[in-house]
Figure 1 (cartoon, one colour):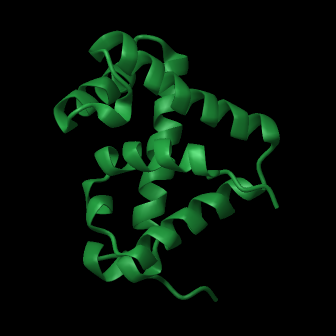
Figure 2 (tube, rainbow, N blue to C red; figure 1 turned 135 degrees about the vertical axis):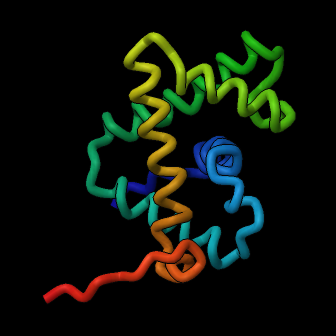
Length: 129
């Protein structure tokens, strides 16, 4: 099984995740591990090329941060991080919006996909018959 969240990717991803889903910042260690497992399991069946595209996009966010704000994404304050992500969210370039929404979806999956989190967000799981 290929693991997507390698140490370098993990750091980049979780910083972005904490901006996109503020609840992530107050997660317990167990919830953080569950988030990582969810993301890795969703991406486990995907091709190496898909992994590479997502990892490249995470690096690209750092590159854009450097150009726009003069520093790596992780070193920017929250307001500047949000501004950088909004550039992708509102980009006139479809490929950048698509990449952003892929990362955004993974970030939210890692939080809202946790069964232990369902009561907090009011989600009631239906029985499968």
